[in-house]
Amino acid sequence: MSSSSVELEPSSIQFPPTYITAESRYTIRIKNNEKKQIHCSWRKFSTEEEENDALKSFDLSDASQREDAMKAIYFTSEVFKFAIWPKRYEQIVIYFNPQEAVNEADAAYLYVEETKERVRCSFKGNGLPPEACFSVSSISIGHVALDSVLEYEVYFFNVGKVACNYQLTQSCAGKLKFEFTPSAGYLDIGEKI
Image (cartoon, rainbow, N blue to C red; front, side, top):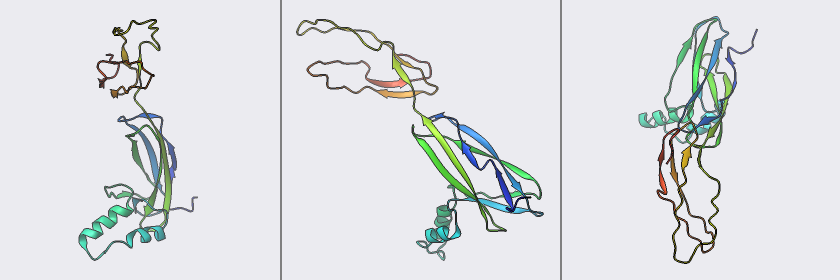
């Protein structure tokens, strides 16, 4: 039998790599080990002391500051509570919606109001960037007469799983000058330009 009043299954979540603006989700179970109903909320801090330190900058007698103080300690911007019935469990869906192509890591603490304990749940996810490529990797131009313009047609493909905006930037290639038309735009999934 567990010494904790609640159990998180699992307590550590590794989301699959997810393209930016897309979404992946994971379901966890919260099991009540008590013989009575308990009430929980998700918090940002692992201890009551850390929470109290965060609350010191608020005047809790002011109603508007009390609301801001609660936002400062709860894990999400929306405060939510739920009940877990005796010897039962609740399933919670956690969403990962990366906005940048970076590795993300965070933790939330399930706070049990009746026992004042906090159970850690960690989250990790990798945001994937859009993927696009040219139809060729190089063009052999050869000799070019002065003041002449050569045109080549290449395709730019969206090969990723999400739509993407693109903007080509010029690199300094000595005295050579290259232009791409269009140099910026939007490509839907599977689209080419």
